[in-house]
Image (cartoon, rainbow, N blue to C red; front, side, top):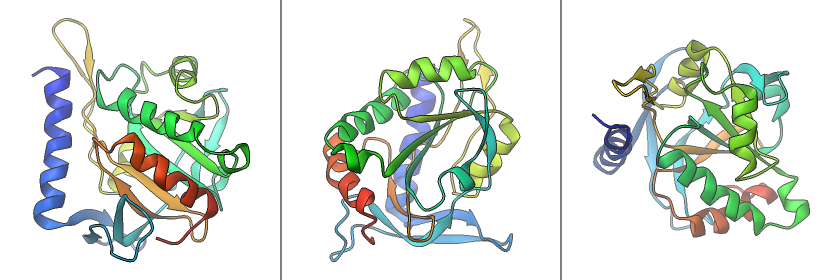
Length: 221
């Protein structure tokens, strides 16, 4: 199966699951597992993204940033609006498209607003996504974007706590690598450092352009 088909399969499955069940599976802070209700666009919500009925905790995740320094996700982004996405730099489709759209939307913010929003990209292919590779790739979308790489087991556990599936990278016959991963973007609000809004694969740039100013202001979902 090609990388494009595998990514499309996963993104499609997520969309079908959302439309059919309106749930995400997540581990609670007490370690229990259960359905997290997802509310499609609330009539009274200012956000165009999908508002979550259950607010996910920001993952307890320590990795390495693009400067080669330790990065504690919770500590470094505490009290800040944060968009979190899991992917890899050699992804042929959804990763560059998603990050590119977010990057364009970020340019529409004022300098003051941009300083209030963290965009975090966590690699699902850490063996190839070195800090240097990540920095070069991210710079084409946003020079202030945060790239994290490191132990894949930690990455998978963090993603799972958010209801996001990540499979181990597979080396194809032609030497290319496929890293199958959920394509959701989660938005964490500064008020409680929890995810309140979800963006699925295929979310248009104009949706991020609409929602990012609200996130920068910490507007409740």
